[in-house]
Image (cartoon, rainbow, N blue to C red; front, top):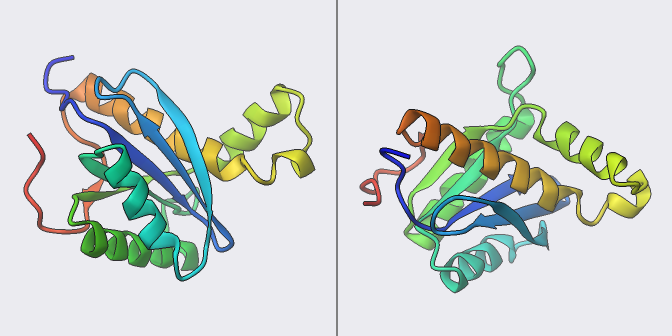
Length: 157
């Protein structure tokens, strides 16, 4: 656990209709779902409010790239959303490769016996959990934060 920065983080899975939000505890032991935010003009404000409520030290925004690692229209959308979050929250925001997080979320929900239709409202939260858990696990194993900062705020201590 050398090099792991203690503190609550939010995972954010940006979709065109909904944004999934997850959080982890201060020790980064477990990521859990928080809520699904409708992708409206109020989405950024709601996530900033959730970050304040949980006293988050940083936000990890999923960066959807193709399996080959190429950028897509969704990649540009997630980058722009991350930049909006950074400006509105004043917190460090990291873009984290989220290849297959939504696929993993659907698979986990199917394995738990949920249909795709009954999972629609929570799949974004589960995808946020997957990307956040992966990010904290990488940081714990390497001692380095994962992802790329979208702003110039100093690293949290």
